[in-house]
Amino acid sequence: MNIQTMLKSVFIAAAINLSIVAHVNAQEWTLTPQTYVGFDVKSMGFSIVKGKFEQVQSSMSFDPAIPQNASAQFTMDVNSVSLSMPSLRNMIMGEDLFYVEKYPTATFNSHEFIALGDNHYSIKGDLTLRGVTQPVTLDTILKPDTANPQLLDVESKAVVNRSDFGMKKAFGGIGEKVNIEVDGQWETR
Image (tube, rainbow, N blue to C red; front, side):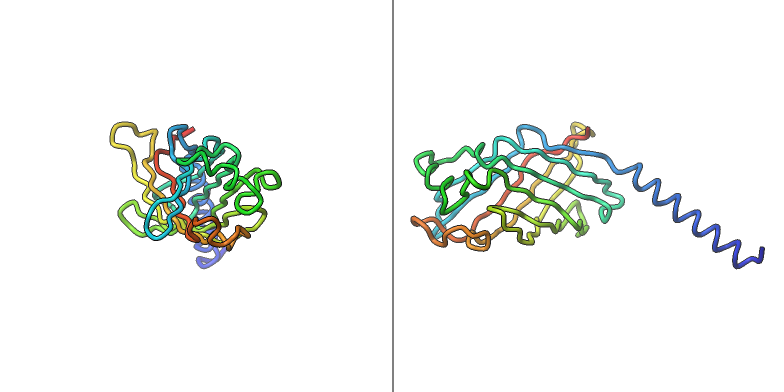
């Protein structure tokens, strides 16, 4: 075996080992039940309604040393939404907006974590509402909790247009832009 072939074999073995180590070091996380996963709809600068998904299934594979290998998924039970204005529930859950009867869940699946420095990440993925999938980028802070190493504090935000998901535009005085938020903690499983 010549030196070039031997070096190539060593580099391939090292790359395989790094890949295995990277996969082993990634921790599996789930959102704590207290975490706020919801939305805020504004019109003319005023908050019209806030909603929190009370039932969220979540998972994240994440190692801050190799964020490019991370992934996150959420499935929200749309019918579990608690609203700041319960009187709007029928309208929001109805055919013009969430249409919960036909589309009982909303999902987010990441496909890229980009490290921006200082625990700041851009998480790109696909949001599916009402059977329509659109790309969304979550502006996210993920930092270790100082009191508990089993927790990661999370603040994540994005803005979407309701009409991009087939919801009626500017319906009933409710604004077109919707702020999506995740605020709380991930805990390691």
